[in-house]
Length: 117
Image: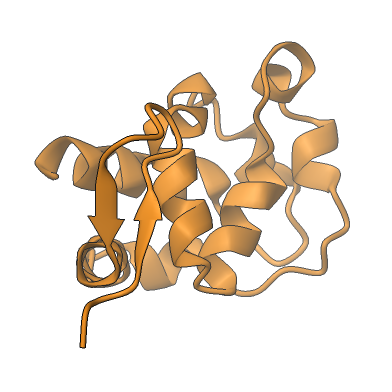
């Protein structure tokens, strides 16, 4: 049986095998600081409301946390194509989050994995 695939969200042409999406997520989740950076999400939006990048770009720290927390493989892959590069890594989101999540830290991990893949 063939692996389920999705289209590349940027070019729309190459297919990304489900196994590749799972490998990318496993690389993110197995990063040494991943468990320190994500603890759940109330979906309160404080991180996005205080994020300077969210005011100027199509970027939401809350979306990053939600994608990883819900293990949305296609959404994670999509965010790794462009959205994660809009983060200024100022960590205002981490300072404001009532759950002590660090979307900026998660973006750092995602950037490392994006470069690797």
